Image (tube, rainbow, N blue to C red):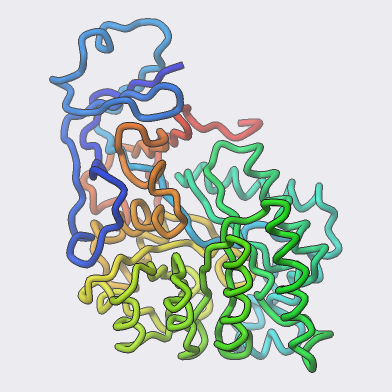
Amino acid sequence: MALLIKNIRELFGTCKGQAVKRGREMAVVDSVKGAFLFAENDTISSFGRMEDLPAELASARTGIEIIDASGSFVFPAFCDSHTHLVYSGSREQEFVDKIRGLTYEEIARRGGGILNSARRLHEAKEDELYLESITRIHEIAGMGTAAVEIKSGYGLNTEDELKMLRVIRRIRENCPLEIRSTFLGAHAVPAEYRNDRDVYINQIINEMIPLVASEGLAEYIDVFCDDGFFTVDETDRILAAGSKYGLIPKIHANEIGFSGGVQVGVRHNALSVDHLERSGEEEISVLSESDTIPTLLPGSALFLGLPNPPARGMIEAGLPVALASDYNPGSSPSGNMKLIMSLGCIRLKMTPEEVFNAVTVNSACAMGVQDSHGSVSEGKSAGLIITKEIPSFGFFPYAFGSDLIDKVILRGKVWKAAGA
C-alpha cells in the first residue's frame, strides 16, 4: 500500500543529495512549509507544497493510506551510527558502584565493564540473545530510529563474537530497520590474555577476521584504541588486517585519554572515529584534513561523567559532526536519539539545527547509509517521524523528557511493534 501524508505543518530535512554537512552547513535545515509527502514501494516518491499535490493523489480513495498531519512537523527518522545493543543482561550494579565513587577503570579491573558483559554473553544461548536484542530494536524503532549500526565486542573469543554477529544478521532479516554490522573483537583484552596480549591480537587477525569475512557477517571493523585497551600499534595491525578482507575501519578513540586513536583512524581512512571526549587542536586538525566523520556520544559522556567532547570547536573548524547513542549496558543504557539531540544542545552547545543534521544526514554518512537514509529525498527509504503538535522546531530537543513523537514510519508503513 502507498502512503500519503498531507497537511504537514513543515517538512524538515529536505536537503538534496547524499553529502555530509560540514561546519556552518550544519546550521541550515532545508524544509517545506504546508507540505505533503507520498511514498510507495517503501520509498519516497514525491513531496512538496500542498498546493502542488497532484490531483490524482488528492482524490484517491483506495490503495493509499492517508495521514492528516495538520499541526505536526515531519522529520527524516534517526540514524544511530554507534550502538552495542546486542548484549545479555544488565549492569546496574556498576551504575551503583560509580555512584559510590569507583571509576570506569577500577570497575574494569575488578572484572566489571566489558568483561562482565562478555561473561553474560558467553552464558546466553543464541536464541535468548536474539530475543533480548530484538526487544531493544523494537524500543528504538518506537523512538524514531530507522537505521542503526550494531557492534560485536562482548564475545572476546571466536565462537562468541560470531554468535553476536549472527544475531545481528538475524535482526537484519527480521526487522524493518536498516542494519549495519561492525566486528569489534578488539573491544577489550580477555583476562586470560592479560599477560600475553599478542596471542589474543593474533587470534583476532588470523582467526576471527577471516571467519567474519567468509560468512559476510560485518561491513566494518572497529578497535577500542584508548588508554588501558588497545595501543596505536595494535590498532594499526588489526585495522590493516581487516582492510585486507574488505572490512571498512571505524574507531573508538580518546574516551579515556589522548590515545592517538584519531590519528591512526585517519591514517586508515576510517569512516568515523567515535567518542572523542579527550580531543584538542591536534585531533581537530588531523580530522580537518580527512573525510573521517567525528561521531560524538553525549549519552556515554553524561552517564560516565566524562568531559564533553569539543563539538563547537569541531564545527567551527568545518568538520561534519555526527551524534549517536552508544546504546550499551555499561555506559549508555539508552537508544533514545531524541534525548541525544537534547544532550547535544545542553551539553555540547550545539543548536537545534546542528543536532538535527548530526542525527540524520551526518549520522547516515557515518554508517554508510546516506544513499537511502538521513534526509527526505525522492528515492530514499520512507523512514519518517511525525511529531505531535508542538510550537516550534526547537521545542523538539528543548523538551528533553517529553514524548513528542506521534507516529514513526519505517519503509513506508506506520510502525507498530509486535503485540502492540
